[in-house]
Image 1 (cartoon, helix red, strand yellow):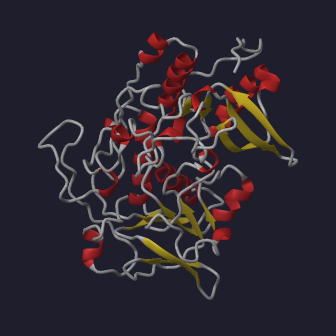
Image 2 (cartoon, rainbow, N blue to C red):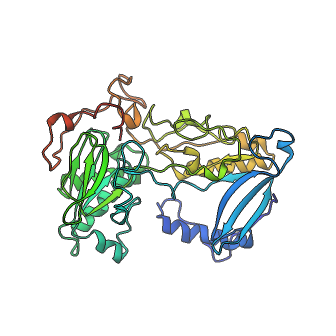
Length: 404
């Protein structure tokens, strides 16, 4: 591993820190200029297929720490290559491995067969072809986080536009509606995040989206008109939809790290020292205590999972967390332990915490008042647009699967 200094291109302008860039903005305004400066140090159109210690699989102890890492990767044209390194930072994220629609963490029956009508990311409705796909259609949105808020808000905007008449969303939730469902709103210390929840609430309040609660998806079937019907674990069959947007989170791809000795939490697949700080079973806050290279380390010295991948399956990652992680890890690799240990990270609070996080366990302990885990607000009844027993919308389905 070599260390080099780079400078920004002369025509580069630092992005406004007060703005909230989209993924496209981020790539165009920051990542591409950075790649241009780094030149051939960046391998484009390449996929890492494996990381190991040179001459040592994960079983061998002898001389392990003295061996450099070897990284195998494949170019788009099929050519294979390898590089050697003193340290490995895996910042590959989880974007390519979205979680499925099924309430058990597995794909719902029929989900793969219906893949032509399902997307696992917020659709870009500025794209004319994508816009036409959803305009005037009935679309199910499965998920309860910021991505689901964004999709609902975008569908509502499409419904109110000249070319989107008849567009309607169906929001599928695995739990009931409460005062915390739409996030912290104006109490959120990150205004843009709070605004997403308010926009989703407006989409429901204004009638652009129906809400189905207490629903764990078990199957997806096609009807005689080639529309999709979602079937729940409790046997409910929802009215047919034209499209499905699954926004149930992401999970890390650990397949190419199989020959390394990692220490990951058995539930979150996050580093064990970090997992308790972000575990959604314990809290649903967007805050996390300061952490750096020590919490991100593994038995395989010199390996770090950073960024969204470090959170495993936890859903509350913010980019500013990744920035500080990388700064701390880079300082540790450079030998500046003092700087690496000086981690300063104060994340904006969400303004709401349900105590039991994703699963809203009715028996979970709640603080009497104030603080991070104040009592969860009482359930609010919202019509689902289908005929179901009252108990199905007033309480989570037993069994623990219905948490978000």
